Length: 144
Image (cartoon, rainbow, N blue to C red):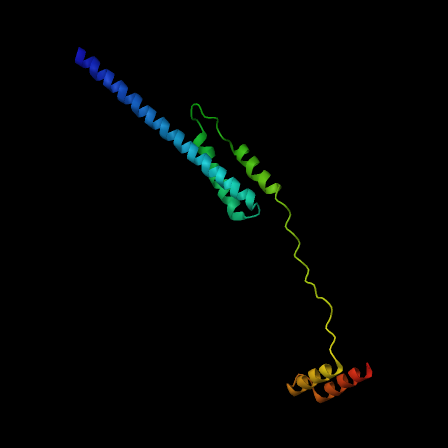
């Protein structure tokens, strides 16, 4: 009789020990999932328009949603909470700055000699015909 009670007692102790290990492991998994999700949200806050970071936050959030369901003593994280977190970060992203306009600066004014020499180079490179060369040369000379 004493042996049977001892076996039952040891069996109960082993069961409790296994239960504690499983629960500890489950809570550690939940904490790790939450930490990963929070880290993804932090990265997304730094670059909210990055679609890769958005997808990562959604994926890790869904993992966290799944792992918190039906666990005693844990408030379940829901799809609505996930959507609120991610969509708020994306919605609050600062607008992208407009591309900087290139400053063309002050136009370079070439001397008469430089302008004629440029025409000669274009004619010699067959970029201008002799007729076009003479026409442009006349325009330059008429402008002074």
